Image (tube, rainbow, N blue to C red; front, side, top):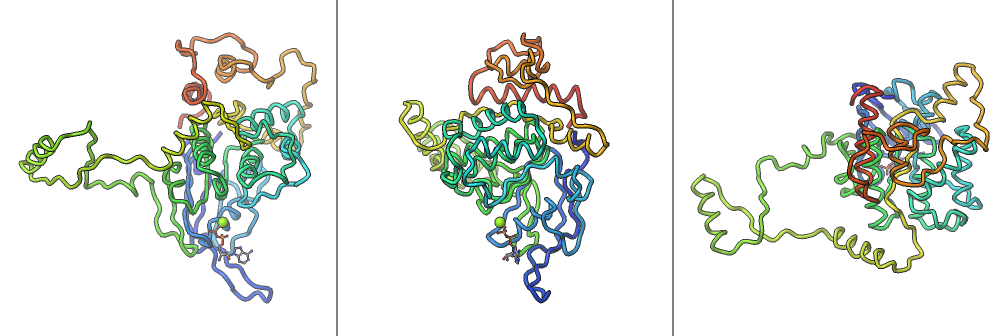
Length: 393
Ligand SMILES: Nc1ncnc2c1ncn2[C@@H]1O[C@H](COP(=O)(O)OP(=O)(O)O)[C@@H](O)[C@H]1O
Ligand SMILES: [Mg+2]
């Protein structure tokens, strides 16, 4: 578990210079970058193409060595196996094995983390449903569209239940609905205790989803801070009311004048095109109009927690020179991660563990609603759970 006051990632004076074949300096991709990324926050690297976002992420992942400067991930060098086991990564370009289907792809990555077969099967079911690929799970990923590849890439990044999720341009190639689902998912994962670092050149992505942002240009940090602070116009106040007639507007204008203020702007608020588009698509989905594309349910895989993933435990045991815990027999009476059948069972398991089936006093009196409302309830329960067990955030 990550301590609330411990930085998940820290870089100081981070610099990467790419050299050509003759070792002459070629490109300064990242220059003197100092970042501190805190637990449970969504941190955005925002910048135009070529500003050094992917290079920074690759250095945090230990895939590229810095020319100068230091990086720590969970207080360890990024190349440390214990740090790596706690990271999930969605690369900018997915390198998928074209002849594997979605299940085989996720199973392959699950094996890399030594997850037992039953755990893999359970997680793959949940992840495929979560990213909306349940109905195309047996199609070869080589035939997937760009957006579908992003979805399988996200599922792959989550298979080890990582504490730190690194997403390079997560929404590239997604349609507006997929983008909205990804953004909601990223927020939900952060509420569940994940730390997320994402890069994007899309302003709306960063504005909607990130707590803090670092704006890069030419490999250098140009601005950094809380997104709300950076965007707030602290010297102005906006009031929204029901529609007003001209006389009332004049009265408001007079009132403001009495206080030495001026009415600067009067207009009907406008919807964003995104909201209009999403309403239309959601209405079509309610009417069950047919689509050949991905369909996400909005439910988050329940194994994704703030705690340590199983890959982590395996690495811990290997490092300590112990044997990997043997997978449970397939015919166990009460499988630890068998698929819960109802929302109530999901909630019960999240609160009191896999063995209990009955609701506990902590279960809210109101029955949980499907989809959206479900998240809130689960997250509330999870945060209660965490507050009791681990250090508070
Ligand atoms: N392997 C490499 N060799 C040489 N130059 C590179 C390499 N990778 C990235 N660069 C250069 O570093 C700069 C930053 O690239 P990158 O980090 O991919 O930017 P971004 O992800 O922000 O679009 C670019 O000018 C790019 O051409
Ligand atoms: Mg990039």
